Image (cartoon, rainbow, N blue to C red):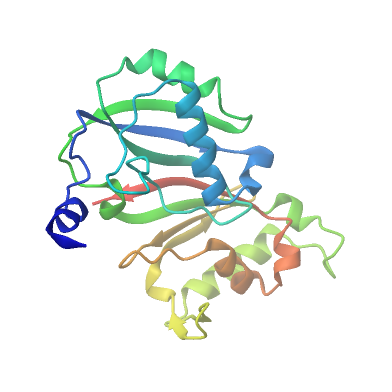
Length: 236
């Protein structure tokens, strides 16, 4: 590779860029079933059509300089997604939002865009916890259940669940892990919503579907009747 290649690989993310912006958006409806990579390419196409002066990395395979919020599990909606994008020149924020939105599919909605410090720390490095809202109204009426679930049933399950000192799950690598310390809070409101707050550790994000399967004692096919929404990120 040589010294030139080494210098290119060590360039800072902001090298050559003049502005960094943070974009907040939501992901709802049928579009919640597209994966993270497809989501990224959807935004990249929108940026191109909106003539946004995006910055690119150096090297033989240049890529747009950006970072997205942690990948959302397939099928989950979100009210709190974000990305950070580097630009080659300063832009007009209001018109840029409009131009991007015109080129996005229904269900992806840009809510805000703001200028960030060019040398600032990535938001992904500052995530402390993630808040979810899980609606059980349709689940409680599902014909696939052997008996109708009441709100009192769920509230009692939550109380027992949180009272456990340890809650073990098997991760994708087959390892047995205790996830109880990651569950910061869990409560149910009068509208059949479970409010779940999960801590993140060393870039590990616990899938709320796994927690609800364990809580309700049902399989993934019945969890399809639960509406999952990522509400917000909490930062350090």
